[in-house]
Image 1 (cartoon, rainbow, N blue to C red):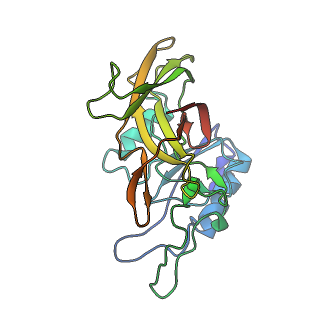
Image 2: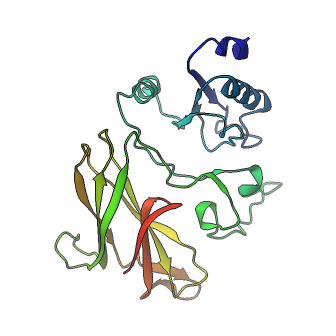
Length: 260
């Protein structure tokens, strides 16, 4: 069978997916008992790369056994070429997760029954909720190289390099300190110190250009008055005066913080 044959190869690539459409929903976040068992069995026998082709997040109970996981969601007709380019090292992965992959089913919001969805969680979903544990955090993504952040600075909106209309902007230098070329996605999570009910939230991100080993780039993130505001019942969008920005490579990989 597949598991037995896997023992004869140097590396196994397991492609896994789930079925869903506008006409029917998935019953759970699982790939399915048979698929999870297959991935786990192969990964325990031989170094394994798991390629996920799914319409959303899935549970990954075998993640500690896999050497790598490549998630493309639904990539379209060029998916095969994209997978081959990344697996064979012809292109460095540079995507970042637009969702959090939960560590378990209890680390995600439970769907409402009978078609009623109360949204009682408010803003505290995904990375914005301390109650949820991530297998892979929001904004996460690996590369074949390594990046360092430095020279983080907050600037007034009228400073050189800031966009017209920006209330404040932020600059950070990103350097490729690895051995391969690649791109990094700089992410800015804002903490509104005066609005205790508002969780830390993503309010800006920008990808660098293709950086050769040893090269660096100054990335500028601009924040409009709306971007520095929170919604308060009865008052609407309200500009906040005490804002801390946390800059990093994901919601869980913060490289520096500065007051705006």
